[in-house]
Image 1 (cartoon, rainbow, N blue to C red):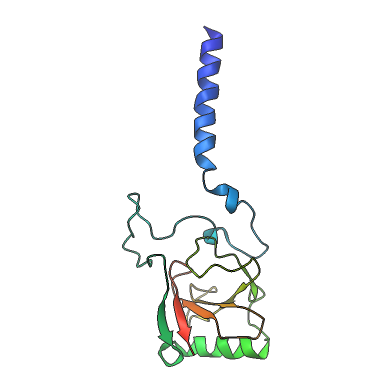
Image 2 (image 1 turned 180 degrees about the vertical axis):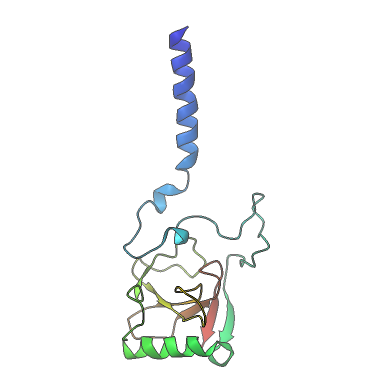
Length: 156
């Protein structure tokens, strides 16, 4: 009787642990300076797999936004990226892993994230610019105002 109970417990534990690690193998490690909210979760997805009301975008090419349509603080962030800094936050320029693959896929180390100041925010806020390619280049950049849940490609 004790063996059957132990076997049942082991099977249940295996099922729970096996389900928890389903998607973790490709995103199991975090880069320094990358928050857990950038991790493997399919942001903006409801339980049914359909986009939630958060405004998250479908997979594919992000929508575009011109530099003139960006908030003034985003234009300042782009200027700092081109100049190579100095950036207002120590976390600016950290590796962005693109774990949710909302941006086009590139080799690890391609994307870096930068803060776009939010007036009146006590912290870094939710606005970021993520740029790909060599540092100081702004030809492949994306803007998010909802902390990486969706992006808009910044048109040149």
